[in-house]
Image (cartoon, rainbow, N blue to C red; front, side, top):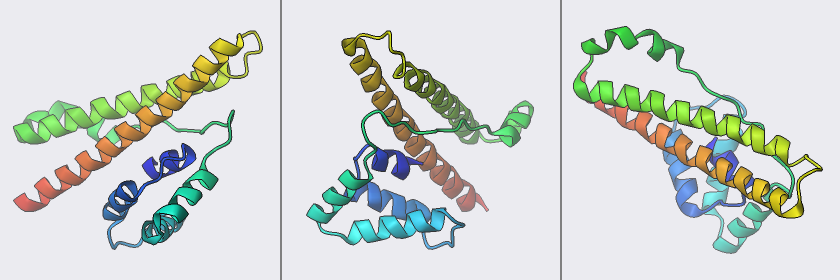
Length: 164
């Protein structure tokens, strides 16, 4: 999700690609994630000018939008009554994860709202530009939160794996 959003915003860079590769690891991924992994690997090995050109080609055109989906964590929600069974650190991770997913979902809803507003012919040019900028900022917020969630999951998994 992070790589797709940043690609559509024209914000691909070596650091992001390295992060994405580290999240994918060596495991086999299902389509289309396997293609995304391969693309990020190729772009990571590209020179800076080629990466910049690719990033600009992937950037969505003005007026385009992303069709983001909300997320749910039904298993975690079903176990909220049993939080006392987990360590304090695990409880903190789970609750922060739920909070961040809720934040992403709100940002997804905000992005839908702003995207619909871009089609409002009653908006002045100044307000249309403001709505368009807010839409882009919302996408950036979703990307940032999705990256934090991914990092949290990797950290939590590593913590659990150490204790086994």
